Amino acid sequence: MNTLPPLPCYLNGEFTELPNAKISVMDRGFIFGDGVYEVAPVYSGQLFRFEQHMARLDRSLTELRITNPLSKAQWTDVARQLIATYAKSVGAKAQDTDQLIYIQVTRGVAMRDHVMPQDITPTIFVMTNVMKPVPAAQRATGVACVTADDFRWEKAHIKATSLLGAVFARQISFDAGAMETVMFRHGFLSEAAASNVWVVKDGKVIGVPKDNLVLEGIRFGLIEEICGAQGIGFELRRIGRDEVLNADELLLSSATKEVLAISTLDGKPVGSGKPGPVYAALYAGYQAAKAKTVQGSMP
Ligand SMILES: Cc1ncc(COP(=O)(O)O)c(C=O)c1O
Image 1 (spheres, rainbow, N blue to C red):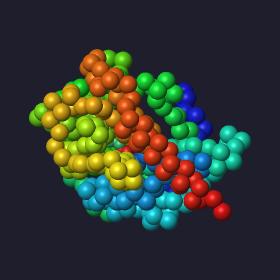
Image 2: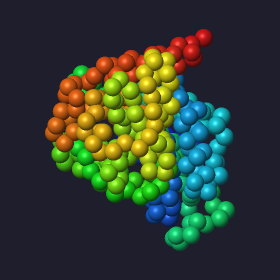
Image 3: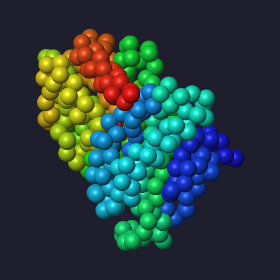
């Protein structure tokens, strides 16, 4: 029985709905997780920081030696058509909807062989869905997180669809009734299962270096910009476990979480145990950036 909702999607050049979108069992995305993806928010019908998502998609595809099958204009056009179709399907105007665009490119279909086959056609899949904002209670109180060793591979900078490491990592926090799993590699902070992690100490925001051990979230650049605009110190460097445990504030960031305060880590309060002033400043800056995107698109 197919229980998928009839959400609009795009598969290899055709617009359709999820229950009708079918790929070959020999797709290397299915067989090897040999593909990359992007998740881009849409506020009031407008793609948010889509340029940056496109740039990261290019970087991920380059790592996999896959030629980007669409131009930036084509990706944008597909995304915009899906945004409009989804809005229509729920009886709304596009500008009255917040959505989440998911993009996936796999190497394509071939007989199973680990070696990357040449000259096959990438599989292109794009869908949209309603954006589920962080519940107000979690915004107000912050969220619980737990820690774990980072057992994922050492190419975490690629936004790859082979996500078993992330699935295992996220399950650790889910089983503990927590929101995210904050991971450490050899005693140094890396990131969370599906978010970047930020330490606040003495009013400064500290993040980890943009290297192969973490995914450079689109919020890296945005948080740096907000800090710059608000006169908040910003630094990227290696962060030891002790610094995380003694942080004044700890934050998560991702497309859906935006910035989100961590209230407890492994059951112990972070700082005051409540979302702090730097979180509040970044969250306000983030909302202003969203509003600017939406206003900028108005005629
Ligand atoms: C492992 C990992 N790190 C960081 C992020 C945050 O990236 P972004 O801010 O682009 O959503 C994600 C997002 O899903 C992720 O999966």
